[in-house]
Image 1 (tube, rainbow, N blue to C red):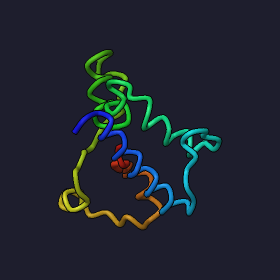
Image 2: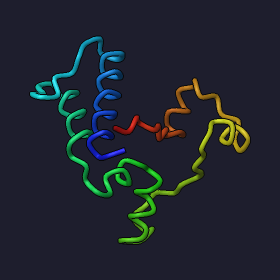
Image 3: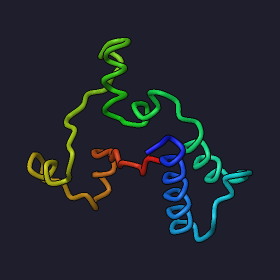
Length: 111
């Protein structure tokens, strides 16, 4: 696929998800709302390394590499699935204290 074909595929994906989540078409030609502007940035401002900056684990590695681990808080674990987390700790994810223990790093859809 060419870059233009990939961009058109990404635009279709962003439009479909935006419509599904917000119930209307995004104005990508003249974005006015915060959400429209975010979608435009995802599509047209392809900054090298940006994906690394939105991944919490990748940012930790980058900070450790650049300035050292002394600036990082203690990490008790990083898991790919909740099953892995449950195997290590028995946590009730619906309890108020779980909010303080678990920080999710959801994969946002990549445009």
